[in-house]
Length: 380
Image 1 (cartoon, rainbow, N blue to C red):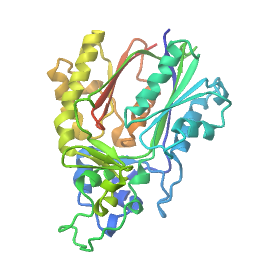
Image 2: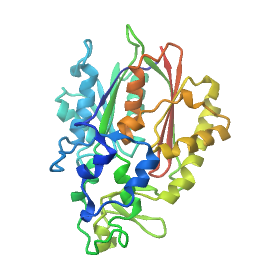
Image 3: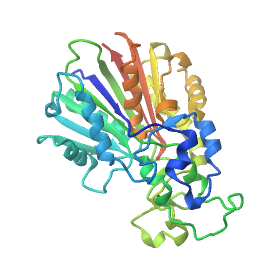
Image 4: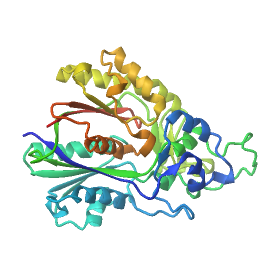
């Protein structure tokens, strides 16, 4: 059975935050300015982003479930579809509000829906696509006439200064003692908050455009590669990660950043493009498409730093898509993880630039343990 994206919604909390105001909103760790901030912001190309934080107190203005719920409500802003019509709700996120119950159930509670199937998918950026794929399969197999999938992130919660314990080292010279290790500090200037949602149905819109889902491919290389991006644990010299449960392995020096998000930069640089090439080549071989078949390429990359690297990597395997066919809104909306592909799609969907017959190739990488998702859509 064919499946169509009929509506898309994006939600951002509060007013946008400029590069100059980030450290004012998030606060300084140990009351010291970040040494990583300037170089990271120069490389990532992000000009503004959104935080679910009160600018004066750093108090959260939304829960993750509330962000997701607002994106779902956005699907109902025009006539013809209501929350009560939802037959399946699929929610993906990097950081749910609770360890349990599942994030999808918390979103369901925020929406106050009648009894309905609700699903939670875990991961990082890919979690938004595994939620989408579950929704797609539910409709494709005839288990429901429609399904809503959501990706949402509340990254600011673990990037604000009050999240980090004060350092035992009282040396206040940032040139002699950076307050945070780079693998933790640089992510404070990379991630932001937001949510996106999609309504999938078994028939296209009666008027206007829809996006037919042609195929979705997802491959993970976690069986071959060590952990790269993680939270709630400590990575040892041998590459193994000790999670928060193994408290006996957590030293007092590590406690300050135990729950913080970290990324092994060297591991990322070495493996992100090569694994992308393998996943893309597998999709090309499986579906027989070429670069010339793609009218719009929608990449979710975390930083403009990787833009040319992905371009060169794709060209090297015979899939060179000119930049004038790339569509991203990273500079204006920031890196919202699992929500990013929804937010990119939503802006292009309402831009007036899509015409029937055009093909969209979506690319969603995840550095957690190197996973990649490619999806092809056709405008109808």
